[in-house]
Image (cartoon, rainbow, N blue to C red; front, side, top):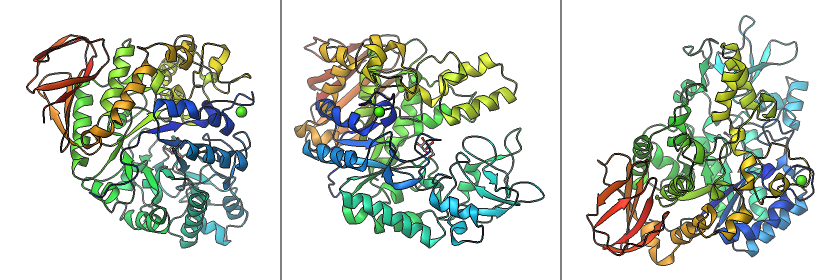
Length: 556
Ligand code: GLC
Ligand code: CA
C-alpha cells in the first residue's frame, strides 16, 4: 500500500459555535480557535476539522451555506481565517474545512435567482418539479421530517430539499453546477487548506424517475433511503469531483457516507477511492433505530459485533475514520455506556477502543475531557432544527410533552453542541457573555483547567493514549497493523490485536460491571496502558476491573 501523509495522524473536530468565544457575544469564533491551538497541540492532535463557518443564515448551524467564499461575521473575517491557517501550519498541524455541496441555503444567490424566475438558467441549479394533483411531486420524506418538497409561491412547482426546507438540493446533473462547485473547492485548496470533511455526499445523485415509494409511516411518506438504494451510480460524480479537485492537491478527504451499498467500500476508500476515508457510523446507525422513539442503548456485545464487522470489512481495503461521537449525535460517553455508568473508567475505555482501531481516529471536541449529555428541562432550551421537528412529530403521534422531552434528552444532537468546558468559572470559561446554548452544569467538575492538573483525569489519559497511538516505533502495529479479534467468545470482552511487521499489540476491554479473569494466551512484553492503576509484573492471567481496558505489547 502506498503511504499517505495522513495515515498516522490523529484528527479533532471543532464545532466552532461552541468551542471558544473570543469577543463575548456568546458564540464561538475563529479567533477563539486560534487562542486554543496550543491546547490542541498539547493534546497531540494533528488534523483539525472545523464544522462550517461560511456565510449562512444558520438555520442548520451553518450547514446551510449562502456564500461559499465568505466567513460568517459572527465567526470572524477572511483575515481571521487566514491567520488561523498560518497558526495551524506554524504548529505542524493541518486544517480541514467542511464541504457542504449536496445543498446550499435558500438565501444563496443561485436559489434566489431561481425562484425569482423559474425559467432562468438558475432554476436548473435545483430540482424543481411540477406537483401532482395538488400534492408534491413524490412522497419522499426529508431527513428532518415532513415532505422533502416545498411549494414555490402560488405556482404548482416544488423544489427538493432532503434536509430542511431552507436547504434546497443542488442539481448535480447540471454540469454548470458541478463546475461552479469544483471551482470553489479549488479556491479553498489554493488558499492552503489541507482537505475537507464532506457533508451528506451520498445524497448528490437522485433516482431520476422521481417516483413514489412504499409509505413507511403514518404520514404516508417514504424514507429517502429507498430512493437512494435505487440510484444508478453516484460514483461518476464522485470520481469527477476527486479528479477535478482533491487529487491535484493531495488533499485529505473524509466523507459522511451513510448509505454505501454492500461491496462498495473499495470504491470509496480503496487505493484509488473517491475519498481518503469515510466515517464508520455502524454504532451510530445501530443505535439510532427507525424513529426517534426507538433508540436502544447498545450492550458491550453489540458494540463489539459492530466494530469488528466494520474493521474486517475495511481490513484489506483501506482506512475508516473511527469516532464515538460528533455534532450530530448525543455524547458517546452517555449513550455507549449503560445508564448511570458514564464513569471516568468507562469513558477512558471507550476512547481507547476507538483510538487504537485501524483507521484514522477522530475526536469530537469535549470527548477528551469526558463531556456527557446535558439535561434539557424544557423544549425551549433546544436550538437544533431537527430536534424541534422531531419533538413536534412525537407530539403529533400522541406522546406527552414530558415523554417527548425525555426522548429529546436521550437523542438530541444539542447534547453534543453545548459550550466547551474550559474551566470552573462562569459559563465554563467559554464566553464572558451569554452562551447561545446552555452550558452543561457538570462543568464545575468536568473541565480542562481542572483535568490538566490531575494525573488520572480523562484529559491526562487521552494525552497518554494519543501519544501511545503516535509512538513512531509502534507505527507498524498501530497505523499499518492488521486488525484481528481476540477472545471473541468471552461475553462483553472486547479485545483485538493490531499486528505489524515487527510489533504486536493486544487491546482488551472489559465492557461490563463485573470483573473478569482472562488467561492471556500470548507472551506479554510490557503493559503499554491501562485506565486503572496497575502494578502487575506478571501477565499470565489478568483480572480486569469494571470497564477496565489494558493495552499490552506482546511477543510477535
Ligand atoms: C450532515 C451534517 C448535519 C447537517 C446535515 C445537513 O449530516 O453533519 O449536521 O444537519 O448534513 O447538511
Ligand atoms: Ca464570538
